[in-house]
Image (tube, rainbow, N blue to C red):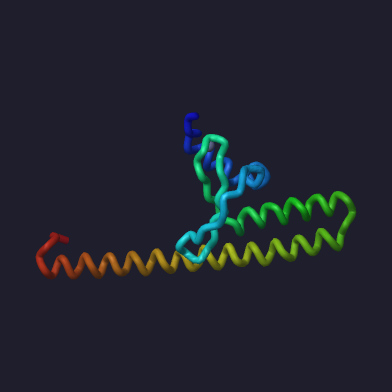
Length: 122
Ligand SMILES: [Zn+2]
């Protein structure tokens, strides 16, 4: 069996209903305070997508369904949970940016140190 092109996997990871229809493998820490949901593609590859984003897509879809069915209380509950998830995703994104800046700063310090030692020309 051949492995799907990368674009196919990327599109699949953003398509919550299709992604969640794949066999569930487990969860994995993304190393940045978030959780990846792992599922097996039909080609045999294991794909990981951010769980919060999948949950958010699921909640919003449920809210839209409830709204169409006239279930306003249910729609409102799903919207409330969506807002909480969106806030978590935003915080995670902010933490990631802080981590990246910190890593850049460390790299710059290392480069300056190396430059002082005459290892690399700046
Ligand atoms: Zn695949």
